[in-house]
Image 1 (cartoon, rainbow, N blue to C red):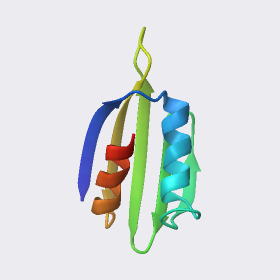
Image 2: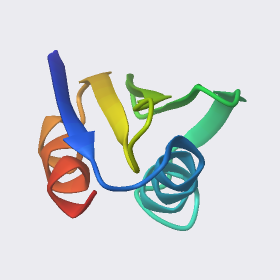
Image 3: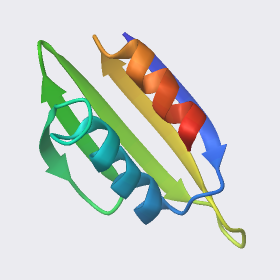
Length: 82
């Protein structure tokens, strides 16, 4: 299991869109099981990825935390891209 966080130059909505593209059916191939304005969860192949984001007040960007099981390499790659 992995849990990793960072500040991103992308706002929360953009991070979640990128997460859906990266981890969803057109990317890694996971099923989106839930998505809210703050977070998204993807599941498949015995694992999951949970992306949580919060806009940084008075600045452009957001704080992003990603947790997952069985998708550690993909999570690290996603975090490098955002």
